[in-house]
Image (cartoon, one colour):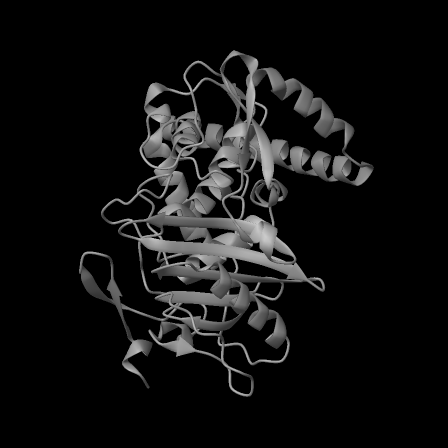
Length: 364
């Protein structure tokens, strides 16, 4: 059995590496650093990505992978987790005015201004279409602050069993300790596609975005495959100088959806992703899976309700006695009379016996 079945060497940009025990999520084969593909079908097209996953969203089967659980800097693909976490928590019709901190975030921005007001729905469009780091921070602040949002995002990753993912920022801007994997990005995308609002944001090509003084301007989705690839739904692309290019995208054809996630690609990846998607559709249902996209951890069952107290307040005692009396049958009344009568007779006998003994002692 290969060493990869027991140890996964994790390497982040900058040379930091460590060994972690594996029982790889999704199947033992996914612990390999090399290409894993099924026998009996043609190999996947070559890709310059350091890591990738091709999976059938409909069935959850992983069709091929390369270093599926390798941990890398996710760049803006992490925004998919931000959206998936916050969409259920925030009212999309809520109107907010962003802080100066949110408006001044470095990197890609949708163009938030402290002089304008925005619906949460607008912020999610700015997040997923324009990859706005300013929108990411504004959403985090609306959710109760950066620290709370990081806790929520990491809790959501654990619920999805995306155990390679550690979120340190809502935007994906590089930060020490932040990581994800091609496998986790596929898990996150699959969960997001089940949410109608998430799917709407990632599929929108262009939209009007608010500006100060009641004006608007047009924003466009950064996912070029929305215009180039038949059946493309979208999801998210990302890039930083340290992370290099990353992307997760899904497309639907013939009632089935294929997802491709790539990490740490050196150059132009759009054509490669298109070919990987084509391969996924061509072998779907024909190839033996090399792994599986696992389901989220089920929600905890509700705790058992405490039983009603058996104590009775003084005010309630008369009512309970009346009810008990009304519920007695003739047989219970007869039994009760016999018990009470017997008790009285025994008491009288015992009293007489005691008085007789007392008289006897007085004679001594």
